[in-house]
Length: 488
Image 1 (cartoon, rainbow, N blue to C red):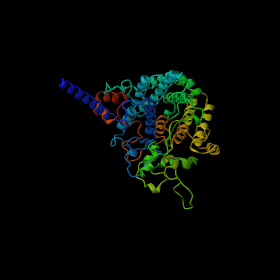
Image 2: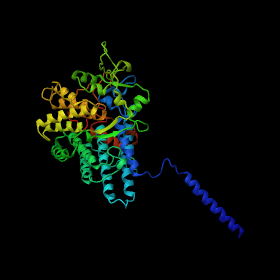
Image 3: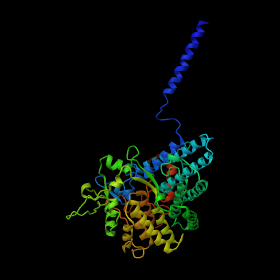
Image 4: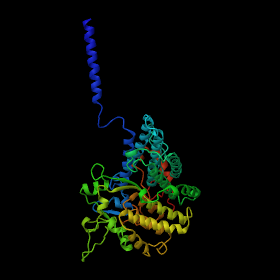
C-alpha cells in the first residue's frame, strides 16, 4: 500500500513538471494565435513598405522610372535584377508578407466569437472581410503589373507548394469581379477595423472611395485591350461617381517619427548614413526645362551657381555619380514620418483625362479639366500653391492646348512627373503610355527600359514545369517581354 502512495505522488509530480515544461515552450512575445486586427495592420504596413522602400534588394523601380540614379553601385540602374535576386524578394514579400497575412486575417476573423454586446458586430465583420478583399485585389494587381502571369487560383495553398500560373488578363477580369463584390458588401454607415486600420482608421466610406478608385485603375490599365472596351466603359460609369474627389481621400500611410515605424526611405538614406542615390538627370532636366514649381519640393537645394542661386543638377542616369556633385533628394522625402502612398486623387484625375480622350467616359473638354486638376492637386499635395499651379499650366509646353504631342504624350509626361517617388506607378504608367521617352543607359543589360521583372530563380528551380508554362505563355521570361496591356 505504501508503494502505491509513492507511485501516486511521483505521478502528480511528473504531471506537474510536464505542465510547467509545456508552458516554457510558449513565447509571450510571439503568440501562437495572433488577433485578426494585428494581422491586418501588419499586411497594410508590409504592402506600403514594399512600395515605398528604396532598398536595392527589394524595390529598384525609382531607378527603372529614372526618378533616381545610383552613385557608386550602378548594377540596378543598368537593369541587373538577378544578382540580388530581386524578383524572389518581391514574390516573398507580396505573397507571404501581404497576401498570406490577409488570408490569415480572414481565417481568424471567421473564427473569432461575435461580440454579443455590439449590435453592429456582424456588419463590422462583413466590412472587415470586404476591406481584406480590396487589399487582396490591390496586391494581385501589383504582382501582375510586375511579372505578367502569376500564381493566383492555386496561390497561398500550403498543400500545393507548386502552384500553376494564371493568365494575367483572366486575373484582371476576376479582380474586377472581386472588387465589385467587395464594394457591394461594404456598409459605409458602420465601422470595420477601427484604429487597427493604419490607412483609414476603419472609415468604410473612405474604403468605398478607395475601392472605386482602384476599379478605375484596373479598367484603364485595360485601355489598349480592344476586347475589353465595353467592360472598361461599364466599370468607369460605376466607379467614377464613387471614387476619390479630393486629396483628402488619398490612400495614405502615415509613418512615425520614431522607429520601428519610420518611413523606409529614411531608414535606407538617412539612418543608414548611406549616399547611394541622387535624382536622375532624366527627371531633373525635364523639370528644369518646364520650370516645374515642384523642383524645390522634390529635390534639395544643395547645388548653387556662381551667383549663389540654387540650381538643380541630376546625376547621369546609369553612370557612376559623385553624391556631392549633384542635387540631393528633398528632406521632406527623406523624413522619418514622410507618408507612404497607395493611391491619390491625382492618379484618378489623370486616368479620367485619358478616359475622356479615349471616349470611355466624358468628352474631350473633360480631358482638359481633369488634366489641369491632376497637375494642380499634385502641386498642392507636395506643398505648392494654387498660384504655382496656375503659372505652371500657363506654360505653353504644359498647357493642354499647346503642349506638343498627342494626349498620350501630354498626359504621360505630366503623370510621370506627378508620380515622382512612386517608382512602381511611374514605371507602370510609362510602360502603358510610352511617355516620356525614357532611354536605357549604354551599359544596360537590355537596350530598352525593362517592361517587366523576370520570374524568381527559385520558381525556375523548384517549380520548373509551371515556370516553363508561364514563360511560354507570355512570350518568354525576359526583361523586355511586354505585358498583355502594353500594346505599343
